[in-house]
Length: 126
Image (cartoon, rainbow, N blue to C red; front, top):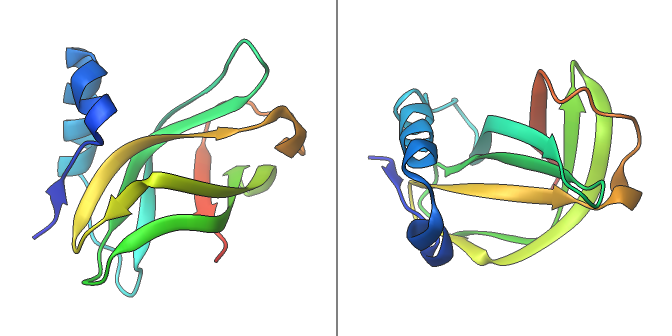
């Protein structure tokens, strides 16, 4: 059975309303057939540095451990690639059938097109 976990710093710092939103999105998750992992979007934003912040829940559906090591990700809106970047995030270690909220930060130089910050999707390339 899928379970929701929080990275230590998130668990200590997350606002109550954000925790409720995460738990609601987690409860609405369905397991896509054949997929090892998926990302349920919660929100996107641009920070003061012009970086793209993509927040959601990373779901890992398989039995083996899942990590983010040299993993290429693309952020798309309505099928159009907005940003592409290779991430290594040592804090993401998901055991079997776990989900964890996370914000992926795409640096300014990874932006290919201007984001509308709506109808987005995060895809794992490898």
